[in-house]
Image 1 (tube, rainbow, N blue to C red):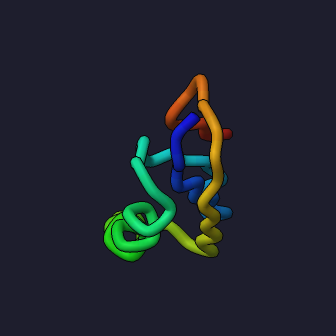
Image 2 (image 1 turned 90 degrees about the vertical axis):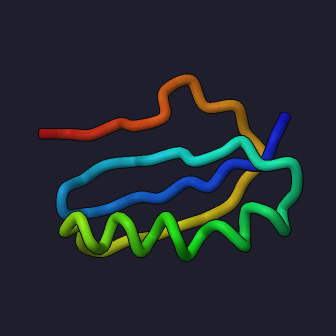
Length: 63
């Protein structure tokens, strides 16, 4: 398993997975850049967490 950054936005409701990262520290260092990109795209209410996982889909959005 690898470290992945999971970011959930409420407006629009989407779950994004960024990674894989070799270490927790690497994921932490990259987190702010991904959040900033989503903000610039107009995403609202952003929540992020780093976890050991193996996501099947990297982007999941509800219309």
